[in-house]
Image (cartoon, rainbow, N blue to C red):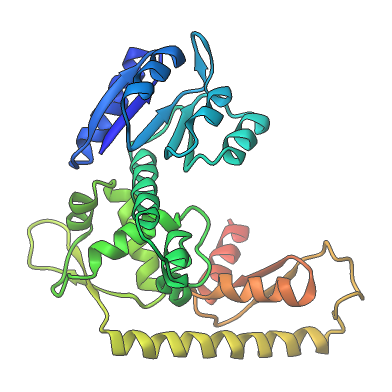
Amino acid sequence: MKVLIIEDDPMVAMIHQEYFKRKALDFKTIHAISLEEAQRYLEKNNVDLIILDNYLSDGQGISFLPKLKGYPVVMITAANDINTVESALTNGVIDYLVKPFTYERFSQAIDKVRDFTSLMSQEKVSQDMIDEYFSYSKENEVMGELPKGLSKITLKKIIENLRDRAKGFTTQNIADATDISRITIRKYLNYLVDVGILSEDADYYTLGRPVSIFKVVSIKELEKLNEKRKQLVIDYIGEITKKIDDENLEKGNENLNTPIVVYGKYNEGIVGIVAAKLVEKYSRPAIVLSETEERNIQRFWKK
C-alpha cells in the first residue's frame, strides 16, 4: 500500500511513518510538506491512502479535500471545531483523528481504510458485506450495545484474533498479537466473558500471582447462551414493566426527565440492553442496577 502523508511538521510525519512500520504491513510512505508538493506528486503518481493535516504552510487541508475525490483519506489534525469535522465528513474522509492521538486509535483508522478498500474492490457486494463494513456484524447482534468506552472497531479486531484459538490464551497473548495495550485488551476480554463469548479460569501453576486463562466458548454453547440472554432480556423487561405499572409510573404520568431506577438480581452483562429497552418503551432515562452494583452503592453511602 502506497501512502502519501501531507504534513508540514517533520516530527509528526515521522511518527506517522513509525506507526505504519509498527503495523508490520507492506506500506510505502511518501511525505509532502505542503499542498502544492502533494498536488505535484499526485499529478504523476497514484496512491492508496492519503494522511492529511489541516493546518499547512500554504493553506488548509480541508479546502484540498475536493481535489482528493477517489482517494481514501484519513485526516489527522489538531482542528477539533465542529465546522472542520463536518466539512471533512461531508467530503468523504474515512476517519478523523484529533492530535494528540494514540497508536491504538491510529491502527483502528488504518484497519478501517483496509476494510473500505476491500469493500470497494468488489464488483458486487452483499448486504452482509456492507453490514460488516459498517460494524453491524453478527458478533454485534450477539453482544448487543457496547458499554461506554468500548469501540466496535477494536472489538472486531480482537474477535477476529480469537477465531482460530482452540486452546486457552492470556491477556498478554492477545495484546502481543493485536499490538493493543494489555490494559485495553483486559477490558474487552472482561466484556466478552460477561456476555458469554469467553470463559475465564485462573492458572495457579505459574510463579507469582495466578494468571487468567481465557477460552472461546463453542459455537453450540454460544448459541444457547445467546438464546438464554435474549430470553432474560424479555423476562427482565416484563418484570420491570409490571413494577412500573403497579406503581402508576406509566409514560406521561411523571416528569419525563425523572429517570426510572431499578435494581435486583439482574445479569450484569445485559443490564445496559435492558435499560436501553426501557428508555425506548417509556421515553425516559433508565438505570438498571445488578445486585453487585446495588451493594457497591450502599457501601459507598455508608462510608
